[in-house]
Image (cartoon, rainbow, N blue to C red; front, side, top):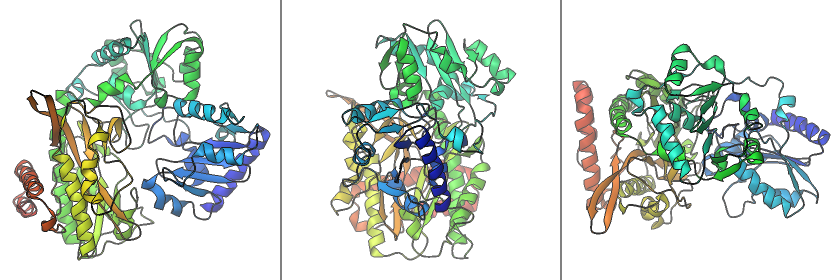
Length: 593
């Protein structure tokens, strides 16, 4: 792939010379700021060969670099091998930021190109400010890939479906009304949305334009006067058109969205510049007022309603049944020499697909055996997959999309003999998971304020992990959903009753092994005292945690009690749906520590 990447970089440099550009920045984003994107917009992957979901490529006239975070350090180093692209390990103290690196490389008066149609507005505005201090121009008017990417895939055209009220729990009309009411609190008259998952939630539709996430590419305009969905009309079947009519939603062509702002003036528009392309931001702001705040629709979406919560609980039972059958199979198949990392991915999908309402995987399964477990987002393939031997750790991070919910779970299994050091790391990760699960905190608490609970035991042993501890999860939507999170970096969003988040601390020993344990949790009210409301978490995920690697002496009585109670709940909720042999297996795996 290195040779191919180098040839493509030269094609880009030819384009840059024609346009008098000294550098070009290629983000991982599409026109909708999605995490997973349609092939049409995978320009960063096309030019670099790096397949991770997060990263930015930068090409100058004589150098090239790729910035990505700790989840992908090992993967990126492998996939960039043989190319001229230098890996920059983002967020590490010694790594220069993209603007600082470009400033060091470019002459005064240099010109840096971006495609404003796919570049996040907030990031582009920050770049403009930074470059302006050094007399470097940011030029957002170019899409070189329309010229140099000869076999570029077309935009997706799969039809959308209606997400029924019995699954959504709230009508589209009501969600639109609530979103406008929130925007009006900030003086806005209208709302613009480009994020596909937000649009899917608002209008109670689902699609298949993006891998793993059941969404369709579209834009939306909301106001008291009219609500317009800009989408490829070929995707709208009669039953969907009737749904839109009944909810008061007008439909316009996807490519009509940009022109809409040429004739829409003097409106105060509520938008989120972190989830909007620079081109749309400029088009809106040219003739209108922009109320740039955290997406009000996303804040509403993150708090699950009673129907969604009930659906999540039902989904966890079905997902748990599939996982019990998987780990029971794994226990027999590894000693027989029948397991590869890729085989793990296939088996999980097979067993989940047997469950009611299964609609696909929620992301590419991470199945990392031994050293591969240290690569946070390692993805085995049929051509590149290690055999799982009866020794060491196997880390499996997987999830399912069901019509009534989305799942995300990680378990690390001891598939044979392990060392004392591995046991210690495993126990530290488990302690972190349990201590966050047990958290009780006052209303108004942010995720950054409780992240330390998952890390404290590790820190006391001089150990840390570089990724966040938890992310939101959508309801039959994106497996990574904001705006809330649990991570060290400050996030002003407060944890609220009804929010779903993951709990996934880990320890990664490069070239040796990785450990991660992940459950999904629901924020709920625990008690009300003279000091106000206090919240905590209900663990939603139902799957046994491997107890064989635990060093019991490292566990406190409270941690052991939590684990025993969790395993009792797993057995009680799953066993009625299992065969006699499966239930006996589960009973053994959930016995008290």
